[in-house]
Length: 108
Image 1: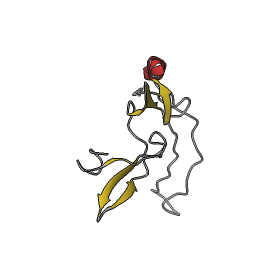
Image 2 (image 1 turned 30 degrees about the horizontal axis):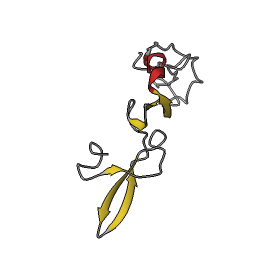
Image 3 (image 1 turned 45 degrees about the horizontal axis):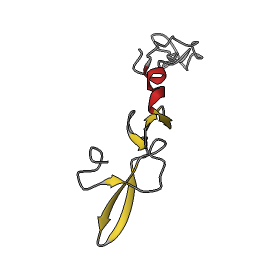
């Protein structure tokens, strides 16, 4: 919360910080919770002996499993898009993603 919103912010009580980080600040005597709709960073404490790993609150002992990186591979090509010109010299695009499997834990 300090890095995202500022030094006066703390974690909003009762929220699942690993799924979506909610940060609290007191304004005019009332607690206000804000989010940027992102989960807490990997390794954020989420309970006694527990940290956020891949969007879930997990026991610290599982960190070794989660921290093992693996590289991804290219998936299949998608369909060709429309040509940018109806006659001569046009451009068409096709896309593919690195999702077969997707990279994991800082893999490329």
